[in-house]
Length: 264
Image 1 (cartoon, rainbow, N blue to C red):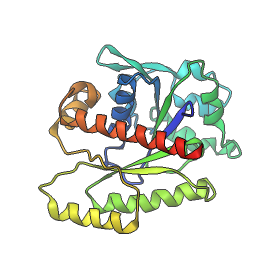
Image 2 (cartoon, rainbow, N blue to C red):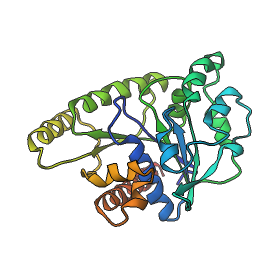
Image 3 (cartoon, rainbow, N blue to C red):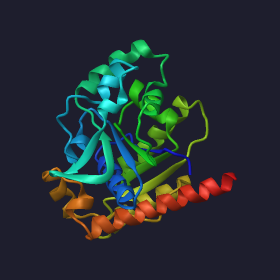
Image 4 (cartoon, one colour):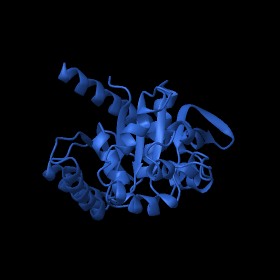
């Protein structure tokens, strides 16, 4: 398998459990023994907050301010409360990214800032997971160009489904119609909303999207974990969210292995 294998979590609509999914898969990979790096490219910094790194001196903004910045200074251990999560690191973000990503247009020709920055890391990672904000700027373009696979969380809302089309249009423009690998993941699935679920499932099937077999079921534990700024995989170990994301991670790993085997 290619190292590092880069997965971006994205949807043009917010509120679809994008950040939650990025952290959860990261925790599951780390628990399975894979050295994993989370990269927060959302200026809201929710990912950073939820792994205990919301108020650090250095953030991803420093790299876009200075493309030659020592990226190793940006890397922190991910935390669950005060406890270090083994095999999981993070490059945090904060509100300054929103300003810098726009002003970084002076580096418009530098679509390899993130690629070169990550290549300077001294730690060898098996996976790099990137949380993309629902917008398009230089930082997001940098990420899309180096992504090996895009995971698109979709909740049971027609606006999230529309967000798929919007996202893929952006990806095609950035990658100049180059093929890209993706997997849709249904989140916040509630079987009691059967009519809505059936309608969304029908649209996704009709569009021919590639969808993960694993669905992330709705649970109050997600909100409870977010309220105390803890990863749900640590907060709700062995509960429904933990089991669902562990299964999803295993499915994604299987997809990657099968794709790599097909190339040989």
